Image 1 (cartoon, protein in one colour):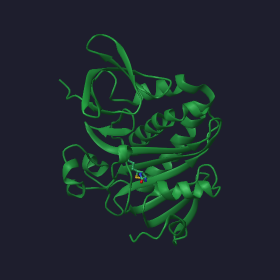
Image 2 (image 1 turned 120 degrees about the vertical axis):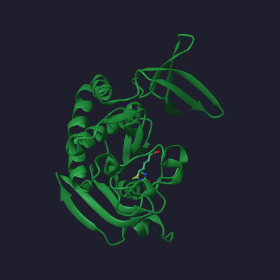
Image 3 (image 1 turned 60 degrees about the horizontal axis):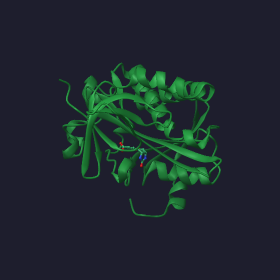
Image 4 (image 1 turned 180 degrees about the horizontal axis):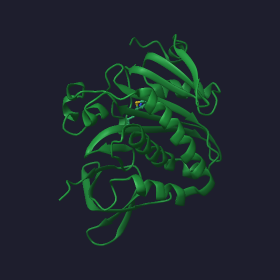
Length: 267
Ligand code: BTN
């Protein structure tokens, strides 16, 4: 897509409809659904507004990575939320979204999806979805959070970038048939509404129990990559800050907040 600027992109022709109480904006092609959702949030779009696109020319991942998905093959979605929670709990929204997506995939397809801390969803040891939450807040107040997710729905192996073909998968590859993206979207909305309510009412204990139910990280040996250094240990818990607590080889516990983590192969 030619770079036409975010304001103009927002106004590109697109479908607009309501689904389960949410306003959906469905585009053919955008730079990034997160960028457009952010622009809409700045212009005052309502809580729960969802931006979707068949394709993205500049999809973003965590740690400044790119996110690739061929047109029409994935569920590329960004939702604007303005939760009434303390600013310090914002990182937990990524973990909450991971719970929602793991449940969405299980309920909509029957695939055994699990969370790899902090923002990946895995099936059979391979990544099927990535989550990118981006927020704007002052010291006291959250202005908005953009919850972005890319689910590999109907991709074949050759649709994946060559360096991801061993490590990523899609729902189609796992099931041997296409999945309905609208079914995934509906289940995502239902699961989000349930779990954000639970989190707002009961806080970290609610999130922790749901996260533990749905994760594939705890109890695994992990390598935490910090620049050129890496640290090995056993993943034992998640913290109130949304961090991963790792027992290091000397027995001490260390919390990691935003690092890149690799799960070791199951023995
Ligand atoms: C990651 O695994 O690093 C996160 C990937 C998040 C990708 C999604 S696709 C929809 C939304 N728009 C973006 O530009 N990124 C997110």
